[in-house]
Amino acid sequence: MWDRLAYYITTPFRTIQKQLALTDSLKIIRRYLVSNVFDGCLTTLAIVVANYIMNNTNMFSVFILGISAGISIFLSGIWGTLFIESAEHKKQLRFWERKLLKKMDNTYIGNAFGFVPFLNSFVDGMAPLMVCFFISMPFLYLLPPTAYYVSITFGFIVNILLGITTAHIAKENILIHVSKFVVITIITLTILLAVNIFLTEQGVYFHY
Image 1: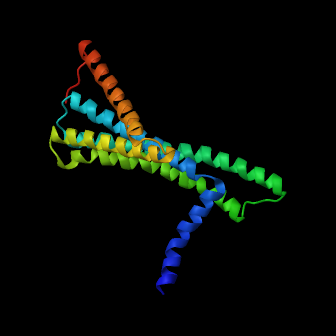
Image 2: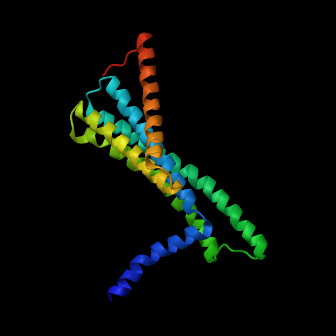
Image 3: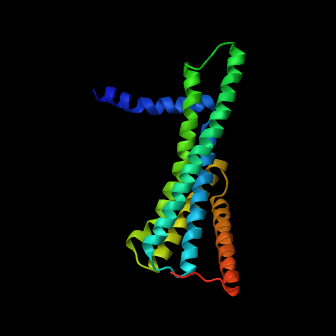
């Protein structure tokens, strides 16, 4: 009984694994995952740092801004990826149809090429949304300035995990890959700080 139950539970995962292998999409999903997690991380950190610079003490508003950014990236990622991936997979499917001289819309291969774009788009959208929520979460239960410090720490933890991931993929030094993500993040936040200082010197102020 337990063997049969395990079979029914694992069958969908084995099917997805086969479809990913068939369409050679695992590498694409991995790239989407890393790229969009970094997008969500940088975007949310920029929001957090900007609010910290402006001395925003309304923690819930910072949380809402972070989640709103995540939802925007989620929706744009899902639809943008779905459109381009569907077009690419239809092109590949038509190629095989010409090679095999038969329609493949209702075959296993056709179903794989039809399903994988939805999986790609889901990963593309969900990755930044989850990261945005993770980095924004401290603003739900902590007070300033602790919430800002913890949130920024969470952001750099994401950077470290991304560096470890890319180092594992490339089979290279982890420290080098982690340093790349951390340096880019620091440069981005420094630019944001410089823009804020410039606007302040020009007499542009924000009030809460």
